[in-house]
Length: 361
Ligand SMILES: Cc1ncc(C[n+]2csc(CCOP(=O)(O)OP(=O)(O)O)c2C)c(N)n1
Ligand SMILES: [Mg+2]
Image 1 (cartoon, rainbow, N blue to C red):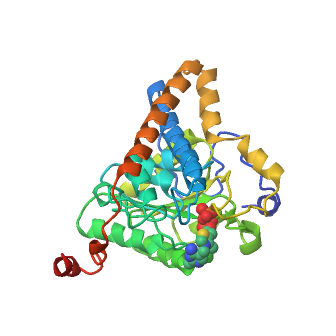
Image 2 (spheres, helix red, strand yellow):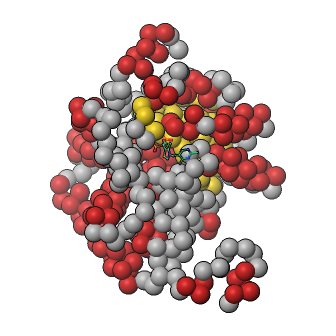
Image 3 (cartoon, helix red, strand yellow):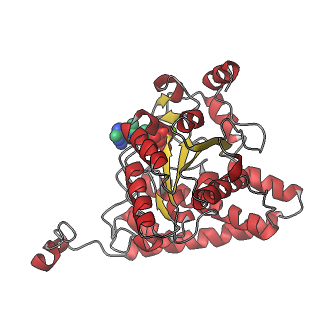
């Protein structure tokens, strides 16, 4: 990386301009795969998946304001291309470890809007039985291992899952999402070191949205080229335009292919942006409005929609049809969550220890 590049990264938080990867560090050419030519059907699926996340969360905002959903809620709006693009590279046997900003990861993984919405409501029909809420979505049947409120806390779990898969001679990959804020935590560095040393099959996906709560990356990190820092551990790492779902998918496919080929962990720095505040409680006074507008001009949903329109792959009616379908799906999820029961108080000690459930019931 040149000094000029470092200076630009520090001073200019502008979104990537091209729809291409912004490669900073690629240590191995052997992971290169031929570019995939997505068809219209595939692009439509990507669009639908991103729209589902966007509409789901916009509904959550309304429900939160109506005090139907309570507690901490961290929205993913603006970052949808990351969850959707990366998920395309994974199989159902692969594992996913996420953060507290995980509604998008869960929905992209195929956990139903019903199960996620019921969890937001704290109902027994939720994917964590109503005990987790927004920050602790979980579904072991889909190998979706949280939802984790601790910054960088998922990273050692991901290394452990990957090690377990390898010891069982499974060829699965464990994908771990985390934010730029994780670089300030020892757990990131401990995990990166061991994963590289033991060549663990882990895909490390850093969602670099430039802020950790109200603190901009350049205010807490001396070196802001995160891909370069990850590469220093001896793993393949590069930066990617996180606003373009197709670019994300291609990068993730290439990384997963390298991991399955046995070349050890891969790191993707996905340059993205959250359009909303850190959480529902955050007044968001630390970001310049023009900065937010600049990133919104590369909204991942508009980016894909415009591309498909330009290619003649999508008409206004098509978008309306998809949106109607998603709205109906979310309406049903809200309705079901409203009707679903809360856990009875007699179950208070269930799942607390392995024997308490029998002892209490
Ligand atoms: C170990 C730990 N320290 C502090 C916090 C408080 N905290 C919650 S979110 C957050 C910011 C994390 O930012 P980042 O990793 O960039 O993720 P983003 O919220 O941007 O998706 C902090 C510091 C925490 N949850 N865990
Ligand atoms: Mg961040």
